[in-house]
Image (cartoon, rainbow, N blue to C red; front, side):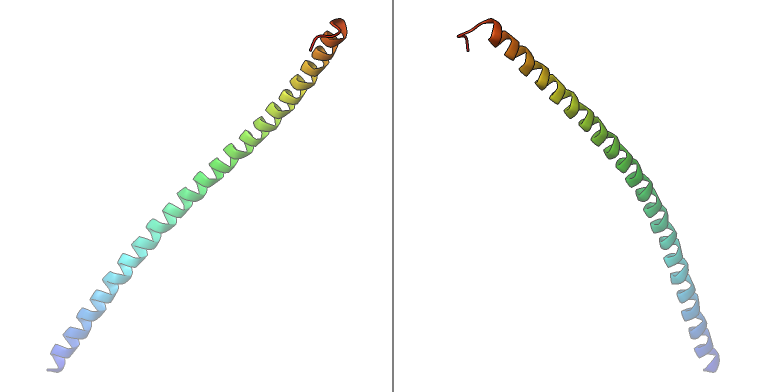
Length: 84
């Protein structure tokens, strides 16, 4: 009887060991996934920074074009009085 109880306890320890191993494997998988997602996030943040810089340049260029067009329209208005 005592031997049977000991075997049952050993079986429980074996199950516990298997579950711990399974959990450790899962933790490793989750850690790898987290690392990959962190890397991808870094890449996307770099892309976003570059896009924001490009947008700022385009907005500057657009403003310069708008100023130049306004200047040209003003010059045209001076050359052609009465025209709208």
